[in-house]
Image (cartoon, rainbow, N blue to C red; front, side):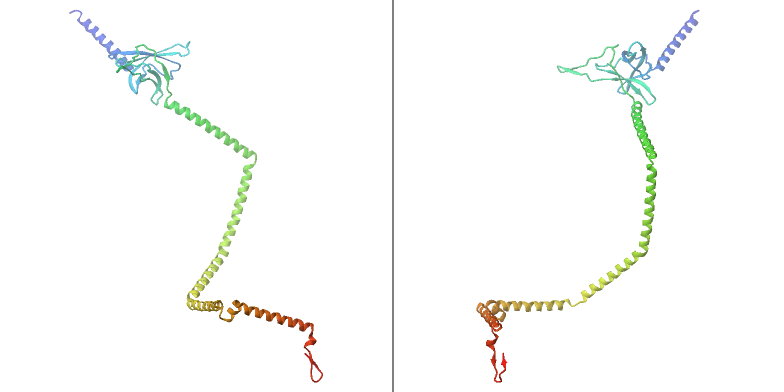
Length: 306
């Protein structure tokens, strides 16, 4: 009974130490009641990775980074130890990737599992990595880093374009091209002012006269159309038809070979007789001109008469 107080104090101290240990590990994210397997990886640059960083598999947290070792005498100076829940078996080909954890710049480990299932004699088997295995490592740039790279490239291109534009403007200013362009603009503006004034004068003076003439022409045209509409076209067309009928009758008389014109055109004997008569008359006139004395006789009173 004398040592009951000491025993109580010892038990209380042990409980406090256990609570302190559990609390520290809980704050670190370590579940002391869940057994884990350890794996290792080697990196050239950690990009800000710290101990107690989360370990994910396809976005699900399965462990944490326990410790970071560094030896700067080697090229890949950083060796990290991670613990993964023991109920998760990592197949062969699993890769340890250093990824961004959120937009605040934190880093985490992503275990990228590759399918290594094999089927042999109808039985599916998978090779599982042993605890303590060194996994192949890689680095996956985060969203902000990718945006930063693209943004810097665009900013650099924009700066180059601005430099080219400034150089071109300086060349224009040095060559007095801008002043010449401004003078040309002034001349064009003056020409436009003159053209505008002439256009206003034409609109005020000539356009009304043109419109009046157009109105007069339209009125005259309406009058002509009215006269044509009021004219006795039917009687005119009747008279034309009668004239055409007369011409057709004459043509028919000529073709019938009964009338005078028909005889003259189609009677060959009449044509030959007229032709012979014309030839005789021509011979007579020729002889009369050559021998006029043959056709002269004396009158009773001694006068010559033709």
